[in-house]
Length: 316
Image 1 (cartoon, rainbow, N blue to C red):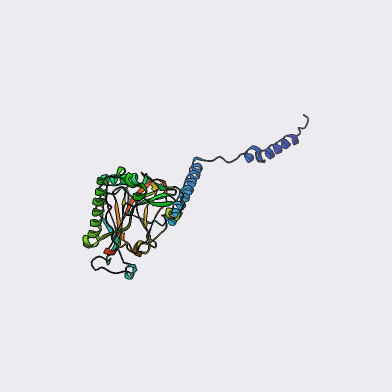
Image 2 (image 1 turned 90 degrees about the vertical axis):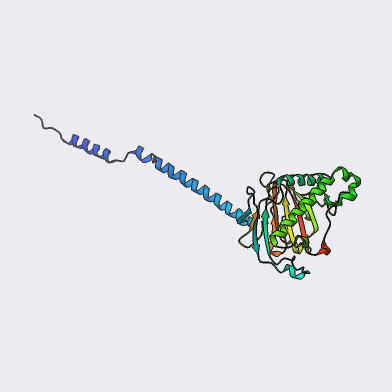
């Protein structure tokens, strides 16, 4: 028998082992497959990032806006809410009237002094008067006491400008309602601050305001600046606002902000809501810009000094 050659099978086995030991090209080049757990973690990470971004945006807006607490939400119906604050020295530079000049200072809100139906009727008075004019900018004024009415970039006296036509715009019932509502607001302030209602006198300016998102044309349209009523109008001792439209239903923005370091408080307007406060620096405040819609309100101011008093408007 001829001798067998064993080298060839050994060489084949060696080549097979080498092939088995060589990494597969396809396995090496193939991307790793994402498991369901990896997909879930990726989605959760993306969601957390979006939440964080939204929180940072909200925080930055909150810081810029300065509002940290809502004193009165639009959805609340408040019998009365009052916060007492220390009085400023603003009253010291003016003649004092014992039993009236603020010694107890603060701010309050009520939704029961004036009904929503009364607020709607009062608003119709504002709408009728402002239909005769209106500012070119975002803020229009109607003062039934002095007759001041925004027209374009200026003011006119509507009683002189329109003369007898006023008889066709307003009625005696309108002016009587105006007086009745003023008296209700005056009584609310007197009770809250523990003073006699007879010691309070209506003072100027007391006026309707209509504010929208139109660009300001004059300084009178820039209603959003922080200010102190007693500094701006020396006769003011007590300030009130009766809101005639609803925040987030009739307009956006336009909230009233009491400005305090680190503790600003906002009032969300609601038709029939009365916000009132002592007029000194203890109640520095501003109004947010209106972003959409139309905000109606009436500012009713009171003084302790009878020399600064004004009469209710009369229908003649």
